[in-house]
Length: 359
Image 1: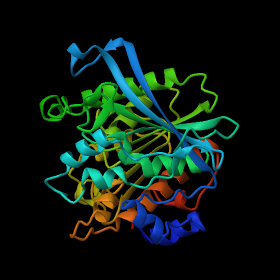
Image 2 (image 1 turned 30 degrees about the vertical axis):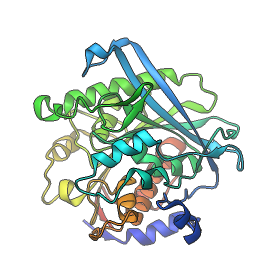
Image 3 (image 1 turned 90 degrees about the vertical axis):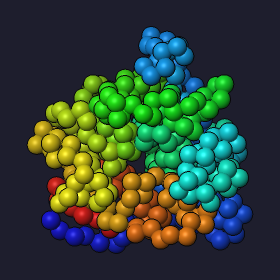
């Protein structure tokens, strides 16, 4: 297994990445990294209801509900700056992490600087679609850095919140409780991944005919339990061409015949001392193109916005992997994988062996 200098590879891929100026970062308090692609980014939010399906976790609530934020390539200078979270979502997310990171206050989260714009005019043409499924108990907004970057590179990214699976996801009527949060210990993770796969197929149905989207090129990228959902959605829906699991389980363990990328933290998915045996179990059953990467120094949230925002908020402990580098690596490897398998491109990053350590 070879050790590669991922930072050098990342710089080769990103070229002249736009920087956040000190003035901009200071004015916003917290700031997401600027997207690395050439396009400006638009953003719109959809509230979807699957009236053919009762919510699996809170049946008395009625039909299954989903919140979806679409990020898309946009005409530069149109629209207005999108907030990271509204005040209710910010308060709920701050409360979720108050014990571990009390510095991450609602006031700071509300002021987080994003790069997408609400009401921005879309660029012409149909784009490949990337569905994003977040980790359990965290909202879709925690994948905003990845979503904005993908949109700047020419993709439409659809970040999905699954009802009652996050403590800080706002639906029409308010922020829903994480009623399902105790379920993994009771019923396992596979039923939740199966439910999310159904959610994602419904989102694909709802986006059919959207003028921004090329439905012939679809991928699912998920963090944590969202990663299990990515694999499960591929098995259940042939419209999904490729998938990425960011430090999540591969449950249920079952065959997978299309391109799939596994990117994990050493704490959970180091091949030499894994805490999650599902990756080892499923590997021989993956018959399509496959790669497995361990991001050296990463913790479970290094693939999301959270480590960076906590650091910027004044968290005093040192992260083994610099959070900004964690985001850059995640963006680079995910984009290189999607470019190869949705767009027919090639990248030096994807020349890695079947299993490598990066960082």
